[in-house]
Length: 103
Image (cartoon, rainbow, N blue to C red; front, side, top):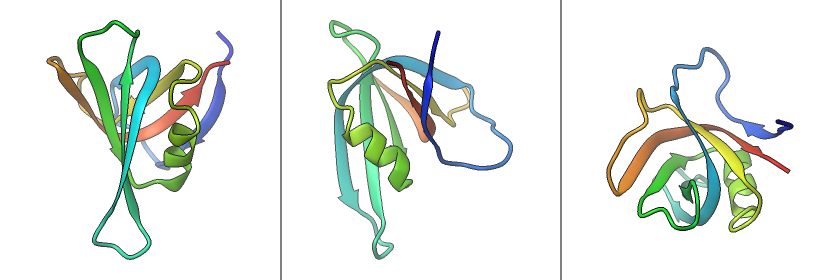
């Protein structure tokens, strides 16, 4: 599969094991206590009729920009720093470490 790396935020050793493919359904941005910093929550589904959503948070402006520009767009892969991929209706992937856009 051909992948285009949209952005990778965290340098150093990766500890994430939650990698999911899907479509960005919604992105929510809100201010943090740190001046000039925004917290972004990215919601995605693996397919349009899934009853559940995965979501991850980031303060990295590059990941936020890639997510915002791809709402309802092409298929993406997103990696979060959660120790395992969760189950349930809302599945928190942790802090988004990377987001790939698949053409």
